[in-house]
Image (cartoon, rainbow, N blue to C red; front, side, top):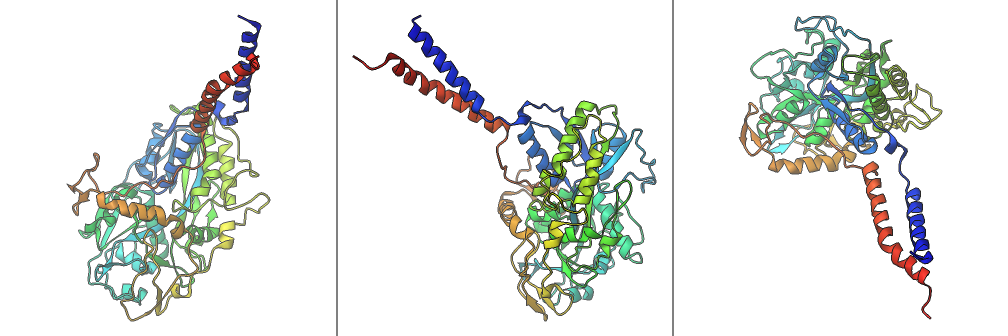
Length: 518
């Protein structure tokens, strides 16, 4: 081999090595994470599924989750078949089904992960046109879900809706058939605010009250029933996110200030300023239900992750590293997507409390760095008593005030205005919610796709079309388009750069080494 050839090989190798060194691979590419698994709530599942997708792309992290309902998730945690659980209520000392008290054998903590509003999603038409601006007082809601009000033209519903000529149509209340944190939160609100109407207290298992009620499993099940053609006249309680994705409206609920309010991320943020946090981080929502701020959505709450604070039969310190990193992502960066998904980001005081919990997880990566947390409710130096979203939340429009006028503006995933058919006046909610506008493209896409969906009968059985294996009416999970570059994308870019260098550099260097022809 000539000296010139040796020089050529050395120069090519040096250039390629320099290119590799210049490629900005992220620090997390060197990290490895043991897969973890959890189960429980469907109320918060849309947010959780998006976060799982994000950390898989950003960190190569596998977080498995099964939305089986809060009751099942708590039991799985007790049985030590999962690494974590998600629930809207804590372990129950006296389960209403008569089963044994829910007492885990190992230590644990409750960690808030996301806030939101339990909405009243419905399917109603007047003269063939979809109603999108329904308003309901709390008393009417309680009477609907106890069977005391059975028709949409009931005088009490008509009084809430002066701009609508309410139709002579039977109401179909759609409730959860499984043990549900959503049912628990909804019945807790009714029990607290209307104890003479709802006399059964808080319950995860919604009772069978009459043949007019339809019971479906999971949040997707109840939302799916309402969104079908046979669901006209139906109403259900479900997290706001599911109404957005389904392209269906939600009822505006009357608050203590006399305004009918939609469960947007801002109205939930305002409402939760009245929440009291117990010493174990569980929530006391009396101040939320009775919050006198006109911007409040009264059925606001948050969801917990139940995390182990010592190893179990399935949970190890290696899994603790994954769980603590995932938890840090959820309460900081992940909250940026909460509003677009139909939830409300956690405020600073709850992030601080969650950070303390993260520190107790075996194998933890440590607590939150509040200077780089990137949670939209606060910025570095803020006081925990402040909430950036609550501070900027708009006042409800005048037409949302209880009285003879009614806003025509659509709600939830159905943003089309509703024509005036009643004797009352109409108006526009010009202040805007921020959520409906941001979610409109996703909701419209979901609604447009529904034409190709399978068709079910009134019992949720498949009539025509293909379900890919399912046998019940369900709505689609909510996901956002992927954003940013993760490890796989950067690795592919590096490989492409090296390939290009291998093709282009040899002939260039060869000509330089040969020198000009004489």
